[in-house]
Length: 256
Image (cartoon, rainbow, N blue to C red; front, side, top):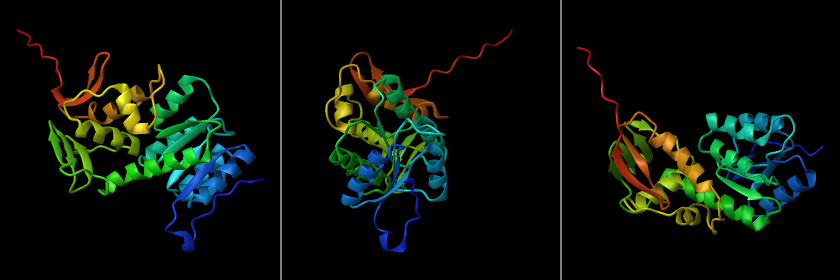
């Protein structure tokens, strides 16, 4: 038995807490050990049901989870968590080879994905990158002149919000990172390879669709809202750019 999900204690309140959800004891303990060595507090849940119980009892600073879990699988956890914790950084670690499973994890709201086996240094680097991106939401990582008004999209540096038609868009850290990249390059088409490098680091593998999945997620929150414009435009075989384009509303037919 190695399940462990303690509440943060008083002498470690300044250390970020990571919940590791993994049913393989060796992998769970090794992951927690390396996270602790990197300066985090690591807690372990061995199955999906225990993980959801722990998450709702106390929300960690990040979630690292496997997809194949007893009782409740990792995909279901991601879907559930995103209903009430849209900003929680989620890193998936999986041995699954099927692309559809990895893309589904990203579609449901995972921020990053590591294939097993992976190095502890890579996991720590991915988490640190997500935490840096999350700091965008509190203004520490905003570039100068970040306030943007485009159509009915507002990137408000003063209030630290992204709004569409006056409504706050509940973006995850990864979606926020993509939006900032598009804002910085407003009007310029970015290739999928360039977006992949700037969002995840490294080089995009041939046929990898992670960028398209992330773009669809962002579109659901800024393009398919109640506003009058779309913002993430597709250039066929080239990539994506940020530009406000009025939505085409069907004309009403008048009966004579």
